[in-house]
Structures are given as structure tokens and as C-alpha cells.
Length: 67
Image 1 (cartoon, rainbow, N blue to C red):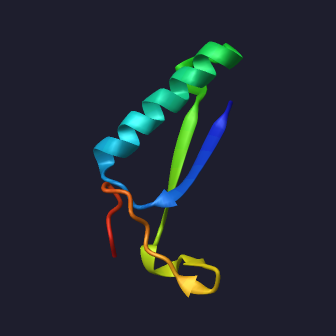
Image 2 (cartoon, rainbow, N blue to C red):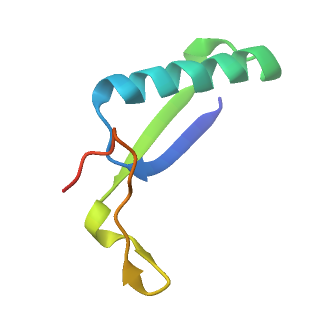
Image 3 (cartoon, helix red, strand yellow):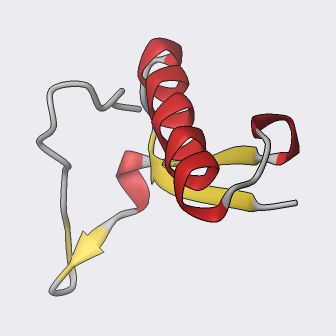
């Protein structure tokens, strides 16, 4: 049973649903696994906890939910 962990900045539920559907479709096609056996788990990251080069870095994607 494949389990996919997705660590990302918080996104709207409809975005997560589309991502989960597409990831599931890839595993069904490439690994020949029934979709019922595939799990996708999202781990939301807080935008205020991300640093780049030692400085706080704010993601710029339009669908990231800011804290």
C-alpha cells in the first residue's frame, strides 16, 4: 500500500484534493496499484517558520494560505 507524504505550505482544501487525485492517478498508472490502496497525507507547514539564507522567507504562490 503506497503512502505519499506531502509537506507544503497550507493550501485550500480544493487544491489538496486535486493534488491527491493526480498523485493517486500516477501511482495507479505507473505502479499498477488499485486507488483504494493509495494514501496521500498532507503536512501543512507554517509560513512563519520558513527561513532561507538565515532570513525569514515568505512563500509567494497565490494559493498559499498565510498564517
